[in-house]
Image (cartoon, rainbow, N blue to C red; front, side, top):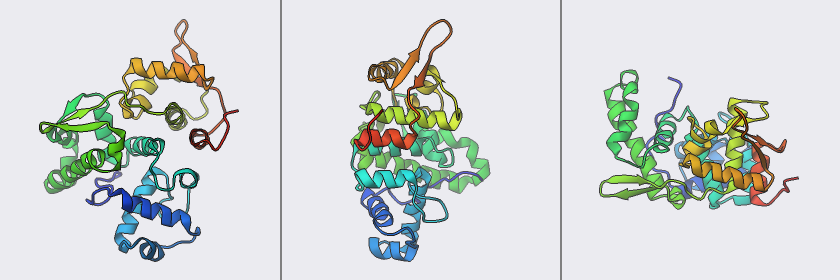
Length: 271
């Protein structure tokens, strides 16, 4: 079974705990172990490990080992309390595009295509898993993870993104949120690196609508997405090629995903 049902083993995403583990890991030396991490954060060893694994799923820590990552060090340098909306958008994008964290991945891809939904709608996204994981896990663990994700976006810190709100026992998806342009560009770069490593251009329709694309995961309609690309073009971050049978962009830099995020934070110039 090459996927994870529960990102935090059924615990709610209390961001103060996530921040405590993130800061403790990066405030101390590279060789911190779980016992020390638990001591610093006041969490038990199991909970500290669960949160560290969650951070690893986002690329903010290495799996198995407790070693740092370039992205984790970067975010710790500029936003160690994980409060900046750009940071939250990056975390949202990384957890939404991780196929291994299957509930988050399918759910956020689905929400990019709907305006309203119920919990029952979300449970139906996983009917194919019932024969693989058993009826109990299907009804209880998946249902619980769905509730945790909704809670993360309506009551916990991801609610600051204002993309999901409860309305009369249903939920509304707020489309076209204010994603910072450089965060959008970083997500495009990430998508390109994963799906087309080494490519110099990429289809606009794909990055606006495909599974795990920035447009889909950020809940941006295609016409609004194209407007944001024009803004990036006007800042000379990208080139747009829309002639004959071409409809694509070129990112005008050799900067990495992490480099673009650092430009967003103000720690690095574009040129």
